[in-house]
Length: 117
Image (cartoon, rainbow, N blue to C red; front, side, top):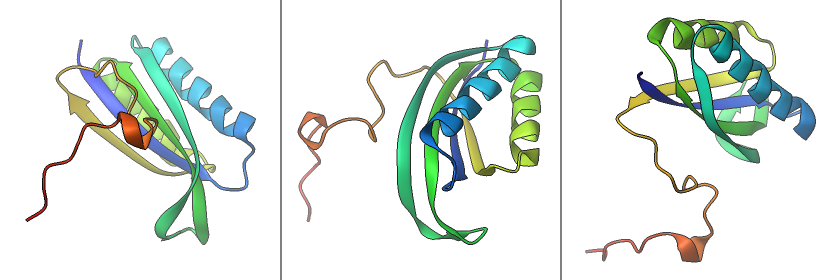
């Protein structure tokens, strides 16, 4: 089954539990359409580079899923229609990484960067 990674930005005036409820809701949409939510991370409220819908901050969430393409399309369609979701990015990946995402790793746990020139 194809593997996908999704990043979702929700409105800043939601509570943490409401933002995590959105993750559970869209995971249920995937499972109802034959897919599965493998893992999810709630990254918290972060400042964006530019305003989106007059919001300077947003709740960020990262989702990993194994789902057929129609299930992902339905989830994206519902995300774009939902009033609390501002942006969605979905990419298809070959395999899910086992480590936590870079956003959740502490600075000293990240691999060293190459030397600058």
